[in-house]
Length: 132
Ligand SMILES: CC(C)(COP(=O)(O)OP(=O)(O)OC[C@H]1O[C@@H](n2cnc3c(N)ncnc32)[C@H](O)[C@@H]1OP(=O)(O)O)[C@@H](O)C(=O)NCCC(=O)NCCS
Image (tube, rainbow, N blue to C red; front, side, top):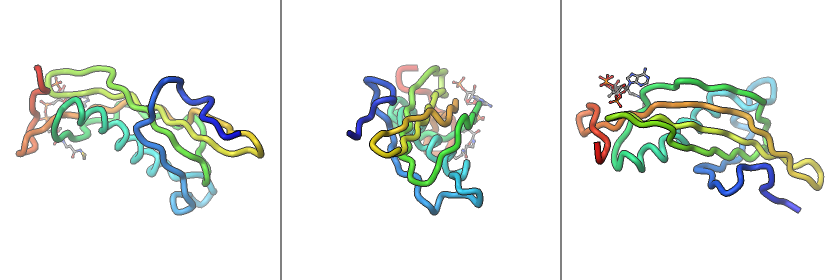
């Protein structure tokens, strides 16, 4: 039976997307740049909700590719705000891959990252977060 077991319990991924052949590199695994793009998009979702307006990515503090992702894997990205300043929001993103193995689904933590977003005004200048 197909289940979501192995994914963080009680949490909702902000993105779920299949890794398709167009994202593969020459070796057959998925290109890290595509995973980084998913991570950035995922992290921006809670940041933009918190900022209630435009944000930009200011820094990728860390990104760790712990395990490879392969064509056919289903990627789930979880994003949580872990810190905030006057204009900045730090978000932790955890990425899991799920792959079908016969009758079973294997779930693997593949990537971890921490990113900093800054709320900006219409001129692209830092803007205080609501309530700050
Ligand atoms: C984001 C941007 C508007 C910030 O402008 P800035 O003049 O650097 O602003 P500040 O120095 O006041 O920093 C703004 C916030 O970012 C934080 N910050 C700055 N550099 C940082 C870094 N390397 N890592 C983490 N946080 C950082 C500051 O601490 C500050 O946070 P706080 O207000 O919560 O204390 C500007 O750097 C920019 O436009 N960068 C390009 C963004 C971009 O194109 N991203 C890619 C596409 S979205």
